Length: 263
Image (tube, rainbow, N blue to C red):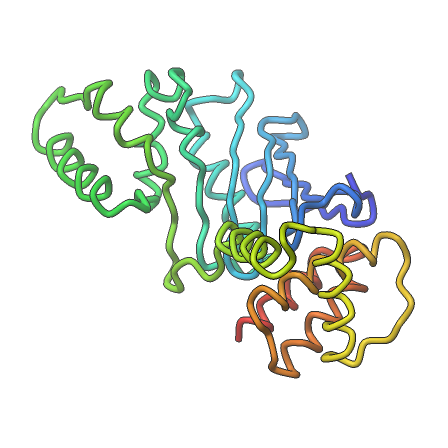
């Protein structure tokens, strides 16, 4: 944990939530991992985190066994409320492992429907339609339960809570473009690709500042990003230069820069 990034939010019904970033050298490229611990009347009740980038994030939830059932839904809603308000999120995605992909506990517990009740839907259109049909059966047939095979099928896709903006940015697609650029333009020489991308980024953005070791890591990230996506716009280039200084010290302000970038 990066202690400087720690924030504590006191909510209602005895719930408080601490959120915190990772130490800079352990953060993943471009996005920020923001962990949390949720307390109920002062006792740790849930933990996990979110991989945040702009208005989009991936989210993971783990409730300690003693607190499962009961207020689990309230806890998740308060967590989502906190992340949505702190980071201005519009799209939250949950990995399919959380509700059953290679996780039979998630299948047996019917965890898919826990998330479904709170507005999460399969990102795969075919599976989303399957879930809609199942939801009708659950509502109309007394005692109806979704079969294990159907739950396994539903777990083949991530689920998302879409608050109106859709998925803003796909980091996996960017990673593929960077890999293709390194392969196609530099014969797979990553070191050379980084060197050339940094030189070009510094030239285009007029960024001539000396960077420390942690900032150098971010400079590499944004330079490869700008090269692979062919970023030419000066306003966006200047936002990327600001990220070099902010990502290691303030994940909250850093994420706001990503929101500004996409605008």
